[in-house]
Picture 1 (cartoon, rainbow, N blue to C red):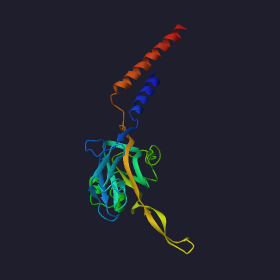
Picture 2: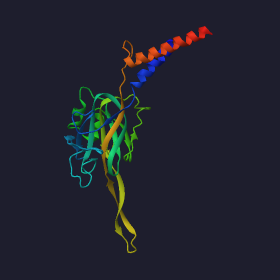
Picture 3: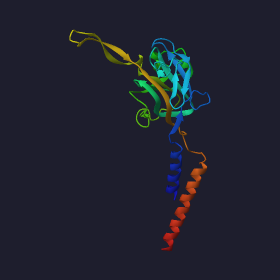
Picture 4: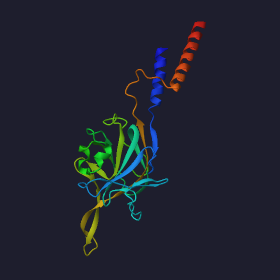
Length: 254
């Protein structure tokens, strides 16, 4: 009977750890709150910027013109970040874009702390090239996410136990100590008399996307010792106990 009760209570605790889906908007009252950050280069200071929201598509950063996609989260004419601030420590597990243009590479980082410095303090006046020395951990680079849900690979492996109230999502790739990186595409700049290209140049391949939603798991309590079971768990335990009593009565009757 004790083993069944333990199993039921364990199932109740696991259900409390189920992944949550969060829709991203530019409302300060939304969970998580999204703020925009930007720098003109990897070596220049990061500063706070605006966040736009398009229903059905998601959020963009920077407030630029929509004529070429720069109203989205992008890495053209500067590098942009969306800072997601949660009320509790969470493990971010997936990201989905609701709108994309051109390339759609992203990187994801978690604030794991640096002394008394807060996540906002680490960004404000920091640079992309020194983010990983200012309390941010690179979770991964994710190429061509498109508009399908992209799992971040955090439910197992090196980042299975990485929980934070602050997460960064940026356009492009990221390399520690360097900053944002871009893919390139080769463009022909000259042709011979037969019309065959004889001169090529590599051009940056920019990334544009609007972030629609993320999923993740809220950090579970560090210990269940001395805690009071939730009402739902108690109800399940009661059902299990009644089942055991009935089973034993039937066994005795035989």
